[in-house]
Amino acid sequence: MEEKAIILSPSLLSCDFARAGEQLMTLENAGLRYLHLDVMDGVFVPNISFGVPVIKSIRKSTRLIFDTHLMIESPERYIDDFIAAGSDFVTVHAEATKKPAAVLKAIRAKGAKAGISLKPGTGAAEIFDLLPLCDIVLVMTVEPGFGGQSFMEAMLPKIKAIRNELDRIGSGAFLSADGGIDVKTAPLAAGAGVDMLVAGSAVFGKPDMARAAADILQAAVI
Ligand code: DX5
Ligand code: ZN
Image 1 (cartoon, protein in one colour):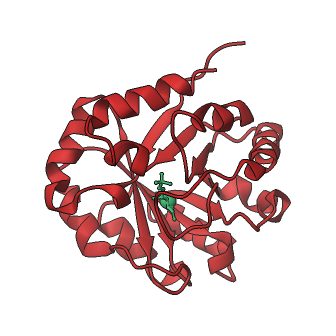
Image 2: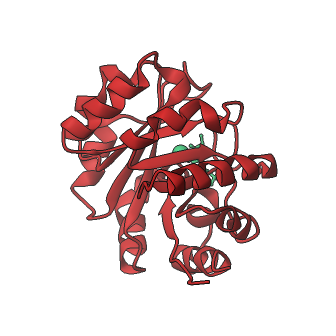
């Protein structure tokens, strides 16, 4: 079978915010192209991270593609702001809005790439009708809210089911796994068919981030 290169999207949540510019430069110099930005509102998830001003500020210091993951209630209220701040991809949670299709369409209409994310308790089939509106599908492999948790292997069948459905409808959307990704779990997610891996603590938590990223990508070659 032909090998497919997997994309690594490191999560800013685990960075040293006092040294963010420098750390992003290190990742960019290591050849990485994406950055995952976890926005938490303390309502949809029991944690608060950062929002529009931080994204706008770091947008000036890096050329990485911004893969913004909104863990916020009723994300439709803030789509325009996150796109204006420099997000290339805007991913919303299926559980956070009553009108996910309208939100995905609004993101695309503003010229950004649209994504849907699923908490561990949300089944694959619940988002199948939204897939034609998606450029990215983000499967949570931990309960959203915190970095540094353990990968839930029980999510692998869900990843496979979404992989099959994306292929069946001929979608080119990225399938991404988020939470607990490291050198041990990357091959599991890759085996289930992801195109992209999000990793926070396994990259930013390491003294040699470039090496840590390369090791995860190497482990994902299956
Ligand atoms: C969790 C976030 C993840 C998190 C990943 O709510 O969506 O992106 O930062 O962190 P690690 O890789 O440490 O599990
Ligand atoms: Zn995330």
